[in-house]
Length: 169
Ligand SMILES: CC(C)(COP(=O)(O)OP(=O)(O)OC[C@H]1O[C@@H](n2cnc3c(N)ncnc32)[C@H](O)[C@@H]1OP(=O)(O)O)[C@@H](O)C(=O)NCCC(=O)NCCS
Image 1 (cartoon, rainbow, N blue to C red):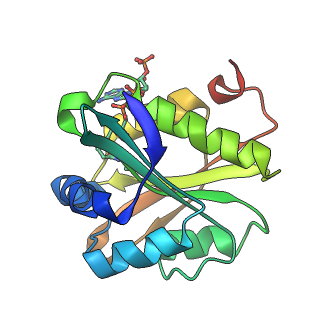
Image 2: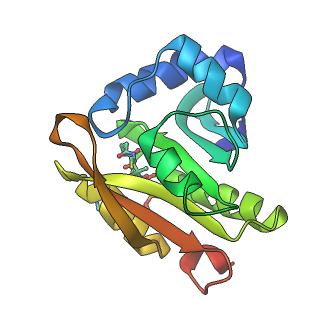
């Protein structure tokens, strides 16, 4: 597996991955993806034999983004790295791709002296794989909010200075 920057040529594969897991993400079309790509601090993919198996998109503070979860963090943290979305294809889950993408985000935050990595995951209806994944990496809940259609999310943060699995080699 090989990690690299995403390019517009990857958009069809990224949109397909997002579509597969849209129940636990927010929806994405090509125009919105292009907008996020332009705003992104990092937009990374993992590929194997030329096939995109996973992607991660992060944003820093001051991005032009209307997501209520991004806005929640922007209202409370002056500097942060926000994981807008991470998806690993069903066939590649459990092989460490998610952890590799988060290591990459963690390194970005470290390199840019950003004090915190933040994200959210669904708690109603729940996303237990994501909860276990984030808890295992050292994230902790800093808030919760209800979105439209009764969806509830846990807002999560990982302090870069803390001793966590991502801070260890
Ligand atoms: C959540 C997700 C990103 C995890 O990526 P992954 O590549 O499968 O995870 P990794 O192989 O790097 O696993 C890292 C740790 O996460 C935990 N974990 C990952 N998937 C899990 C699952 N299905 N059930 C329970 N724990 C899980 C494990 O603790 C694992 O540690 P271990 O290897 O020591 O057991 C991936 O399952 C995914 O893309 N899911 C669909 C989309 C999604 O939910 N995105 C997140 C939205 S908030």
